Amino acid sequence: LEPKSSHYLLDISKIYLVYGDPTEGLSYIETAIRLSPDNGIFYEGRGNLKEKLGKRQEALADYRKALQHDNSNRGIAERLKARGISID
Image (tube, rainbow, N blue to C red; front, side, top):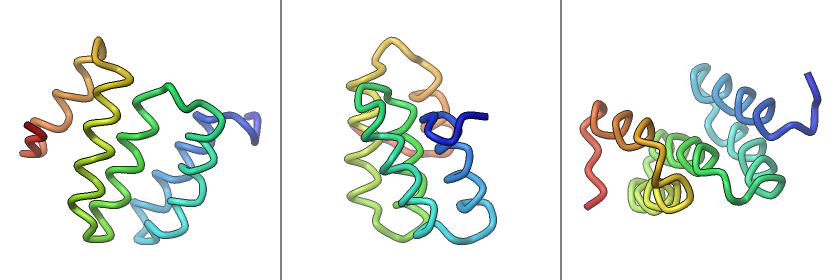
């Protein structure tokens, strides 16, 4: 794995999310976004972390940004819908 790979950083942020340290996960996802600012999956990841931190409005803004960058990726919209998250 390449330590500066955006997807590697996303995976690390997910680990922190799962193990209850979303604040630490944010530092990794922020770096991923800086490296690949046009990839919606990273904004979705940041939204997940912010939601876990109770920052719902910031999370919704990230989910919207994820869809803006990846509007052809129905996976993001479907994952949000499955979790009961509406960003309309």
